[in-house]
Image (cartoon, rainbow, N blue to C red; front, top):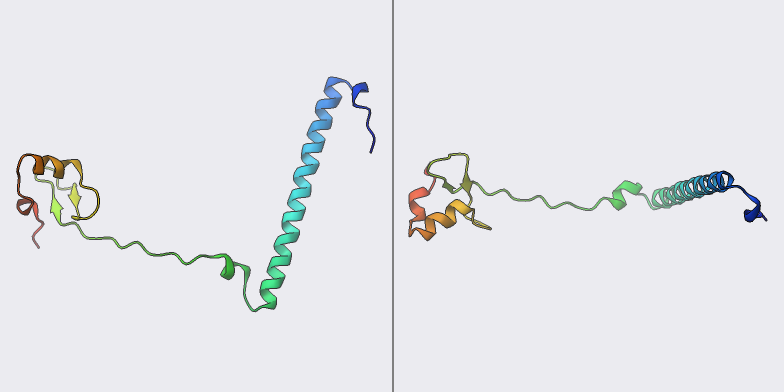
Length: 105
């Protein structure tokens, strides 16, 4: 393909650029679909679905129950693990005892 770009107007050049970008995008979409179809076919040959092979095992995050409760705001709790919330830091800085804020069942 031989296009004499210097003979095109600015509008024609802009349109050509749009056309080229669209052609590239559709080409990439076609190639992606073709690759995906080939991978699905190979997975089926081996007795799997592609989603079985590409899904990673997810670890469930263990939620620890609240162990301490804020004295004035019952919605603020802390499990005693991880980073201390500011209200716990304030209690400890004032020489408070965390046992006084334990949630008793």
